[in-house]
View (cartoon, rainbow, N blue to C red):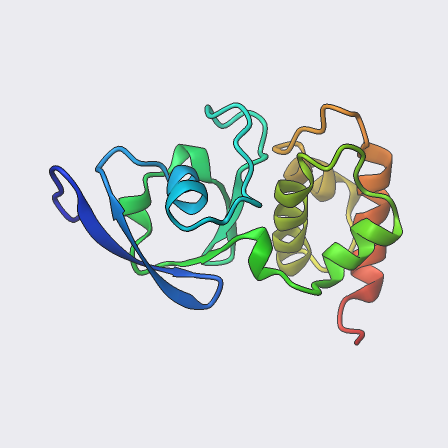
Length: 158
C-alpha cells in the first residue's frame, strides 16, 4: 500500500473515467465520491457499515464505501449509481416501485446489480442473504424483492 501523509492526489477510475482527487489518509471512499467528485448518489447513512446506503461496486463487488479508505481504491474500478445509467435493475426498481423515500435506493440497486451478475438464476435464500446488507427504513422490501425478479426477467433484453 502507498504510504501517505498530509494529502496526496489519487487517480481513481470511477464510472469508466479516470478522476483525480486530493485526499487525506483517513478519507473514506464515500466522502471522496460525494465531497471531492460530486457524486452524491452515494448516500451517507450510518457511516459505520450497517445501513448500506453508501454501497458502490469495487471491481464489480458491492462494498460499503463508508468502510473503505479512498487510498485503497487506486487502480480499482469504482461504479456508483451514476455509472449504472439505464441498467435493467434501475428499470425494474422503477417499474416495480422498489423504493419509497428513495434514500436507500442507490445502494439497493448497486447491490442488486452485483447480485444478479453473480447469481443470474433466482434463489430466494441467496437474494435474502445478499440484500440483508442494505436496510430500507421505510420497509419497502416487497417492492425490492419484486424488482429483483423483474430485473432478472429484463436481463439481456434491450
